Image 1 (tube, rainbow, N blue to C red):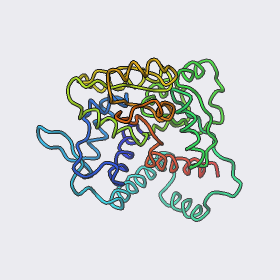
Image 2: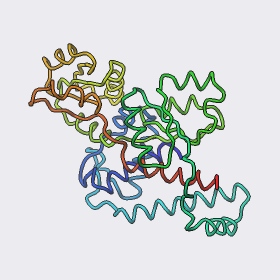
Image 3: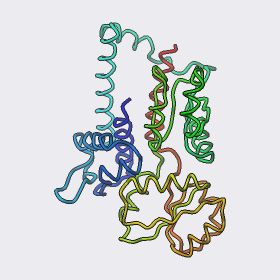
Image 4: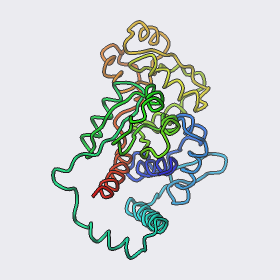
Amino acid sequence: MPVHVQLQTQIRHLIATGALKAGVQLPTVRQLAGFLRINRNTAARALAALHQDGYVESRRGRGTFVTETPPTHARGAARNLERLVDHTLERARRLGFTQEELMATLAAHTGQGRRPGAARLRALLVECNPPELAQYAEQLEAELPLQVERMLADEFARRAAEEPDLLRGVRVVVTTFFHIHEVKRALPAGGPPVVALLSEANISTLQRLTELPEGTVVGLVCNTPRGSQNILASVQSAGLSHLVPVLASADDPWSIDRMLERTRLVVCSDPAADKIREHLPADVEVIRADRRLDSGGVEMLRALVADLEAAEA
């Protein structure tokens, strides 16, 4: 699945479920692409598809907004199903199957569901720091029939190049949009599909940051200095030059104190927020940089897993 389709699908879900409310302004293409660290063309294609489907609208000189009456979830799902059918028919034709053969195979699988006792598919989760790696892996294993192996993003490119059997038996590689391009670059030819997921707070965090006045000092906090640098990279890539960032890490209390001398506004990862919560004064606003993986992305991954299971049946 192309990256822009993955992003489109997950933003559409945020709109359909009300996480992005009618009338709210979306980040610009530059901001969205920079914050998620994806190609601008990828972000532009995702927003263009949402515009075509009636989820967003452009207002001259103002930007892109969620439409006041976005399509219902049912209408959006119907469009998605139509695209899936068209895509499946085209793939079947390329593989030499007729439409009748495809329909017969679908009929044979109807109602079979997941086989009792069937082994979970192996997935590899790639993320940049251990706390988020553990948090996301636990969520995926709890919600999907996956056996999730974990690997830090820094290790993946090196090991993929040095270990020919690294991905043997892995059916899908899962990461976040922050790392999708580096993971795809490191993936050997013929490797498993790669799925990028949004966390629940990605878009809302970016929206809040774009609203802040010029010169606002913002603390950027993760569990480790590397994680804080990753948040900074997203802020800078999004072109949010109106902000003055101050970095700190949850494993360095001195850096937290130094940050709080300059600001009462903190962008913080979930694991770091839990660690430093008791040290933050009551007047500090905490903007969560990540929470759980968004359910729209998880459902998109569930559909892919079902497809992979059907292929193995």
